[in-house]
Length: 189
Image 1 (tube, rainbow, N blue to C red):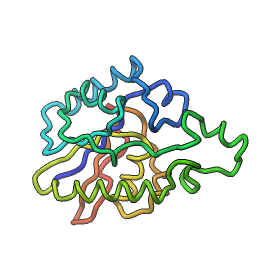
Image 2: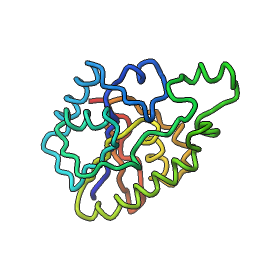
Image 3: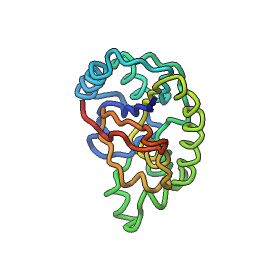
């Protein structure tokens, strides 16, 4: 059976520091570029009927370095919109909002978990029919891809909190006995 391969972009300065990065364009670090090239080596020879990518430069650069030919730049693959929390760490936010949790509260001026879930559901709705033709790759970001994993297996978007996803890792969404499953998760290259 065909599957969806999730590719999280390579390391950036802000992914190292834990700063929330949605719309800010941050380039890959030298390690991030090396990671992206290693993703390409790991995926060499694998055929995809479609490669969808976030429009953010860190995702597009990861795709290029991994030698993945992007067929569609898809706005539904962007990272969770952090609104007023863009560029801040969770620890910094919790100094003034101690009870804040991204996965239950969302972000002021940004997206709620339900909004991210609806966006990812649209994306998965477009991708599922493509699986009749073969594998599909999605190149994106940590929190939105975690929501994709949760929604694939029928969990609420907020349950993406349960799936840690490191930079430059591969995850596979597939089927077992006709049921959507996480075939592998956050596998380093």
